[in-house]
Image: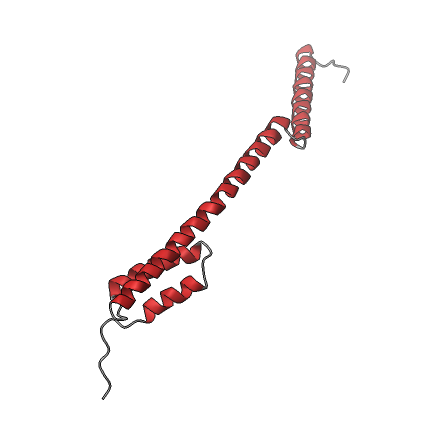
Length: 131
């Protein structure tokens, strides 16, 4: 067993070792970078957060305004019912329920709930006198 290793085998082992070391080093550097924050990305996220906060602040008054308008619409529907002798047809009840659902989804309750309930509880046709 005094034979020597062929030159091509020595070169092949050297190439494989060099490539393996290079790839391993590249992978380790990529893993190290995963834990480091990206300043440009952090800055952009801060800008997006500030924009969302500003939009949220603008949205609050709009929601309050829409909620007030929906309450006014419910009150108008209630007046229609009273003007009709306390009668609310199915169309009025359905429209009132739709307006109330949106009003309630925006956080409205209390007075609007009572107005809608009055409309829903109203008879569809005049009540017959009890004998």
